[in-house]
Image (cartoon, protein in one colour):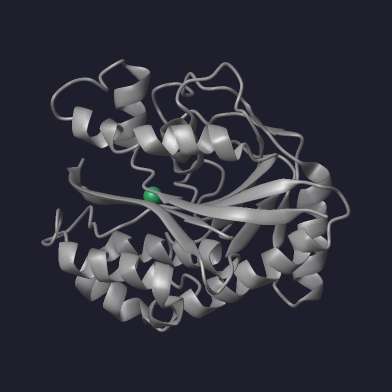
Length: 279
Ligand SMILES: [Fe+2]
């Protein structure tokens, strides 16, 4: 049977992609950021999953205001990197796992989650930056990837509770898949940041730290956070953290926190990263 062995959260800010792709990771601004992922890349190699479910949001690359799925699952064989205005990132094409993806779609839809199934999709920095941070610059990504897009761009995004419960449904789906696969689930985005308006650049380290503490030990405390609190305390883009709750819902109630890293600022955001293992 397939099983979820660990969860990872990472930022997905596009400036990280530019730093990697243009060879700037050892510049003074970027050095501490990438040093913070040295352990993580070793850990990723050791845990060697067969598949990663990457929960992220699309930034008007695959979707636009014309179509706004709340949850969209990628069922294709592959997902090429999107052109976000400067040409596609020089990263490998993401290889999917259609059998597992379709099984997850079937199981979650029958569990009453209205999943959109996407069979042709390009993936943007929301998905490729976390892969780059955790895997470096390989010729091929070392595992298959199932993209799971969450709408956190256009109001109303799903609640933290809905996301957490979707994580539980995904776990049930994975555990009923009849093949021995080791699966890691990524929650990406966050932490506190606001990209526009009067409060652009706002960060909230204390709130971020509490969210990280609770993510490990008391996820229910995070699940109860309403949208208004995210916006008020973490900025308009802090809402991306609901995607971390999909990841957390897919893990055991009790998890081992293997690693944590928080860095301010990255671009004008707070970067948060945590690795949790099901033991
Ligand atoms: Fe984002």
